[in-house]
Image 1 (tube, helix red, strand yellow):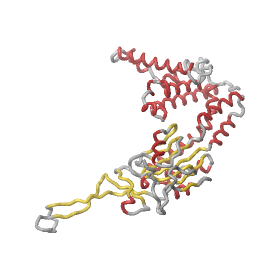
Image 2 (cartoon, helix red, strand yellow):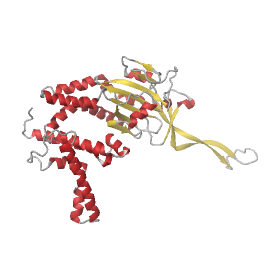
Image 3 (cartoon, helix red, strand yellow):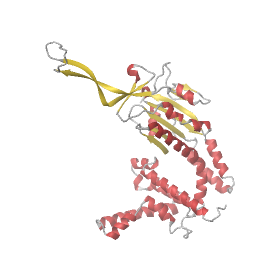
Length: 396
C-alpha cells in the first residue's frame, strides 16, 4: 500500500508531524505545532457537503409534444435518486471534489468539529500534537496526539508521596510498565467516504500514512469511541470526545491511586462486610451460574445439558479463583488488586476464550471480554471505597 496522502493546492502533501516520516513528504515542525497549523499543513481546512445524486433518464414513446425523428417520441431528463448522495469538498471543483458516495441517513462531521475537541487537552498541556493529515483525496483524515508522560508520572508520584517507599516504588514501577518507553498516543480519525465511523482511540503506533493508520486501527487498545455518521453526529461526537479524553487523561494519573486502594482491600478476610465479595464482585460477573442453578431447581429443559454447562462454568470459576490466589499478580494477601490482576490474566492469556486471534483481540480491545474486565474493575473499586468508608482507617 502506498502512502495515499492527499496533495494540497500548492503541491505539498497533506501531512504534518514533529518528526520526518518514512515517505519524506509533507511538513515537519520539530518544535511542535498548533491546531491551526495542523489544519493548514495537514490539508484539513475545508468542509464537506452532502448533495443529491441525479440519474439521467430517457423516456421512449411518451407523448411529450416533441417529435424527434421517425422512431417515436423521446425526451431525456434528470431524476433525483432518493437514497444516493455524493460527498463533495467545498474547496475543489468537478470530479476532484467528490470524495464519497453515501445514503440518505448519512450526515457529515466537519474536520474542524472532529479535531477541535482537542483544544481543552492542548490548552491544559496534557498532550501535544504529533501528526495530522488527509488520505485518498480527503476521504479519510486524522490527527494524533501524544500524552505528556512527565505529567502523568508527576501526578502519580504526588498522589503516592505519603506512601511507604517500597509500596510507592512498586506502584510507580507498574505505572512505568504500563506506559512503556513512550507515552501513549490517541488517534482521531474521520471518514467522508461513507465507509467508516468517526473514531477516537488509544494506540502505540505513530500514524504518518495509510499503512500506519491501518496498523493503528488493527492494534488499537484500551479506551475507544466510535460514532456513526447519522443524525446528531456532531453533538454525539463532541459529547463522547469530552468523556473519553477525561477518562484517558485521568486514567494514567488514577492508576497508581487505584492500585494502592485495591491492594489494601481484602475480599474475603472480613466476612461481616459481605458473605463472599470475590464470588459476588468477580465470579458472578465473569462466569454467572445463577440461571443454570435455577434451571436445575425448576427442572426446566434438558437436565443433562444443564448439568454439563454448570460443571463447565464452575471449572472456569475455579480457574479464575486460582489466578487470584496463585496468578502472576498475587503477592499473598488476597486483595482486590490481586483479584483484578487474576481476571486480566485469565481472559488475556490463559482462558480458552482467548485462544483464537479474533476473541483475543476482542478481549484486548474492549469487546465482550473487555467489558467484563472493566465491570470487574469497577465493582472492585466501588467495593474498596465502601469498605474503607465504613468506619475503617486506611493506614500505611
